[in-house]
Length: 95
Image (cartoon, rainbow, N blue to C red; front, top):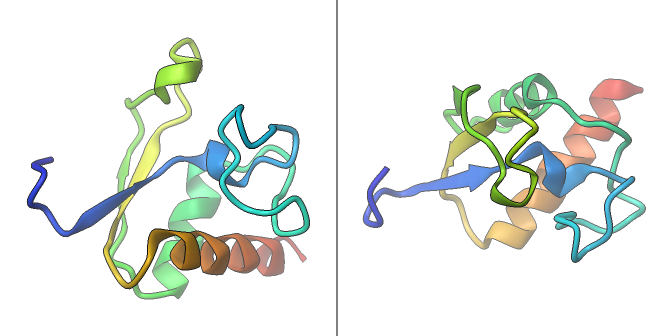
């Protein structure tokens, strides 16, 4: 992935309610879920028409021992707003 690519990297840890902000969570506690998976992020991104691409072999740098994977999505506005929309979609999917 090049710097000029119009894709954003989305890690499942961004939505993990068990993590702190410094531990990787990027959304508010009220929008976060417990133990999010790359599949949930992928489904939520598909629902938001973000053209997701899953890279299962990738590892979040601070958690290099955990092969959680990541999702690349099309850039659409600010990343924080996109993460909030994804988090709310994941929560809705979980019911």
